Length: 119
Image 1 (cartoon, helix red, strand yellow):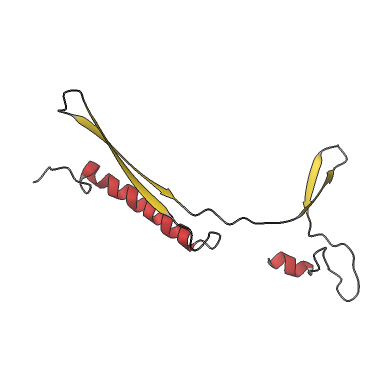
Image 2: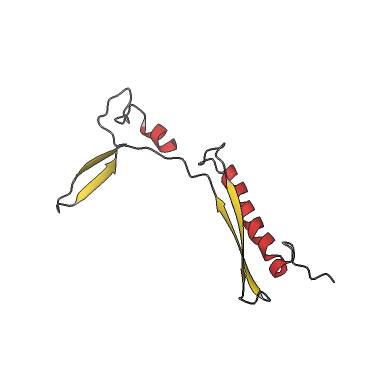
């Protein structure tokens, strides 16, 4: 049995488990349609060595981390106002402004309410 330290046997494979966990996060993030498809993802495996003063014993710390692509920003418009108690309120601007016979459910953006709900 070779007890020489390596990444594969360090803490019984804990470093590889940490890397694999971050790898799964990266792969899931790549498949998320709410992120930039071409954004760069990154995995960092940090290994720190801290020997004692006689250099006969030491501590090794392993930490894996991932940097994922952020989710895409989503824009909407809101009406701002004050309610009857004097508190600030906001309502998403998807309320019907008027009704007519040709398009009875028209919103302020010229879309039918059903179209807006499906977005």
